[in-house]
Image 1: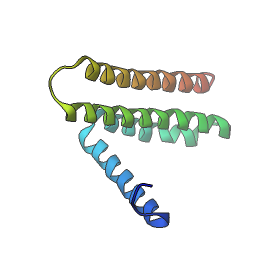
Image 2 (image 1 turned 180 degrees about the vertical axis):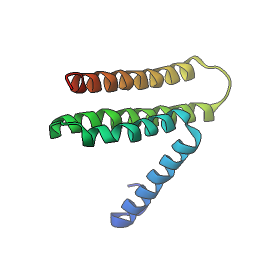
Image 3 (image 1 turned 90 degrees about the horizontal axis):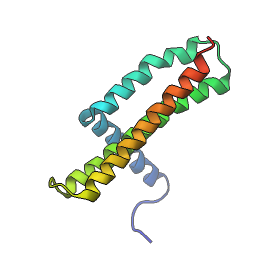
Image 4 (image 1 turned 90 degrees about the vertical axis):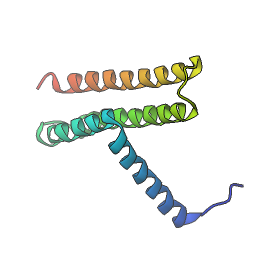
Length: 120
């Protein structure tokens, strides 16, 4: 078994690590900042638009899914960059696949928002 804290102490530590990760993403990742600002701009739509709860949640989850995907992409890029700056086919492939995941999340976000809001 892995040594470390348990119970509430582990939850507190994990929360602190997560906040540190969010701060790092905000400080070092322009795409993450842009997507957070997009979230802040679109949040009023979730409040103002006449939507069912399920529609509001679907819109919110598509935005949060985009942020999650961007965070994972940034983590993969950081690990690959840590390994070395020289080109390696597998490093390039890892970065490209992570970027493709962000692209799909963006497409999903657009499709969901258009599908839910288009009739309005």
